[in-house]
Amino acid sequence: MQPTKNLIFHPQIAQNKPETIHHQNNYCPFCDVENLTNILAREQDRIWLVNKYRTLQDTWQTIIIESQQHNGDISNYSPKQNRQIISFAVNKWQEVIATQKYRSVLLYKNFGPLSGGSLSHPHMQIVGLQNIAVQDNVSRENVLGLTVGQNDFVTVNISTQPLIGFVEINVLLSNDSKLFELADIIQVVVRYLLNDYLQGRCNSYNLFFYKFGSQIAVKIVPRFVTSPYFVGYLIPQINDHQQMQTIRHELRQLLPADLLE
Image (cartoon, rainbow, N blue to C red; front, side, top):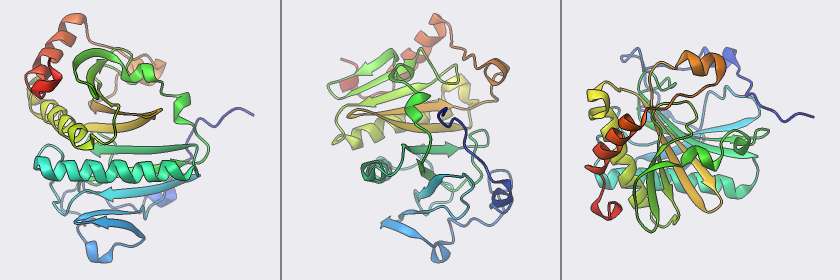
């Protein structure tokens, strides 16, 4: 039997989901903390809970509410708060992986109107997939590329074999006791994408987390309208050498000095 490649989506459940990305005055369930249910864990104002609107068949869908700040984001958190959020999310993700209940366990974040999300309140998602092995779709080559900076436990690069195309910035961590350092670099890259990349024309991004053996990889993707070359033909595009070097140079101005030696 061929391995499962598709997630089955239930629109009859999705039609009842709240939405605040495009209708910002709508009710936000993540602000209404007193009425949250199926809570799995709390840490200060960070809450991990089962997704009330489980739209995907053969999955276990959960949400991490990052903060009580409705307009919070990695780009505007303090470094301390961002470190706590990233550490909490990664630790819970690894807890689910360790149960070995699922073929794959995803950790990802949507931000902005082009990211694929429905709620603007800051959150991440941990999703267990019963029948799909992510490693069939994503290989280590997809998180390698032009090195921007590195030290003994962290590497930052720009994908030369991206998944969707153009700019995908990867952060590779070989020592998961260094999650604070990982969080700091993610914050630098997100701020760059929202404020500096393409003169600030980017308003959306995704984070995707992967495990390759003992290594954690985070792919940070600025989001725009998807290229028809990818939609119709699954052909990613990458920037030419000059543009990749420009982005590399801009990022190197922002990264910690210990990554630039």
